[in-house]
Image (cartoon, rainbow, N blue to C red; front, side, top):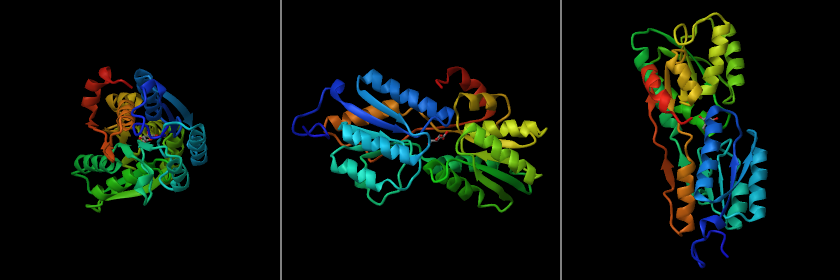
Length: 305
Ligand code: AHR
């Protein structure tokens, strides 16, 4: 039969489909929630899901994708750990007739025939929302020293969240990013980088962390230095996972830009559209909001993750 499904033989029954998913890792609360949601959505839809965890290493993800190609799965979905370096393996999938869906993160490739659709957040927009909050919050300040905890080097959300943020705060030169380093989207990474930054920068006004986990690590470092997170040093993060929202409600984080990990249902919809012979939109953007401390207190009891 045809690997793409839905052509000469018509759609397959959902319980005959096999999808291979190559996940980034388990680096953050966001990622864990994302994995759970995807696994649950496929289980609900009765579609077989082969799952692999690349432990934040591109070579592991490439291996996993190659193994899915070899096993002849019907579809491959993956969240690319970094943006570049995918053309070779994606061409192999294309040659095998296996459609690829990008979830959560994009690839940087000139050839957009290498994937069917990209389903996930607008990370530049997230960075802008963080920047807009900072501009408002520090409207009366003369000088604002900012440290940035970057996500995984080369990852779409790290690149785009830095870009969107810089664009907004760049309009006023009172804002200065005095230090910017990767904490690899982990709590331990955020803590370690923040400890070093506190030592070399005596006068930090704000931490912009590319995800909640690094912000939570930064809180530990700030408290260990005898300072009060959310007061002496303000903190803005991205994600709005449970522990981040709790810290926001507790006043230790000041603002969170939401990035939704709940992509499972939409991914299943994309797969069934393809199976039915349809064409999903090339770009499916996740809907997201932002949270103040008051909004976090209100939202926390109903959060799913
Ligand atoms: O790609 C999404 C990002 O990856 C999340 O914001 C971060 O927490 C995760 O590790």
